[in-house]
Image (tube, one colour):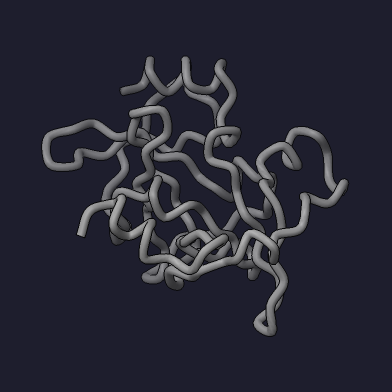
Length: 161
């Protein structure tokens, strides 16, 4: 099945999202931007980069920069464990890895079920939030990957990789 086929098989007015956990909250990103999910692997540190960049990994011969989603979203830090995952995403034809606490599942979220991002937190972190979806399982915060990194951040990443 191609990406186009999967889009046409969705219920009208809904999108698929990969959900993951950070600091006991559920977040989601557009499934079409997710390349793959990896178990935690050795991350080579790179000196002189912003603190949210953990380092680089070798992904089948390609160098991929890994960022810490907790640091990027200004959440409390914690040690990684067996549930920690690196989500490889594609933003503007560049692959980056995002370390998260755990990956849950792919869910369908109707556009009508997405509320605008609330005006909480500071502008630095609230700009990442695309919206919020509420269900019986609780709130899911939708992350806008295109805004996760600024142009300056992308420049830093290009220098690393």
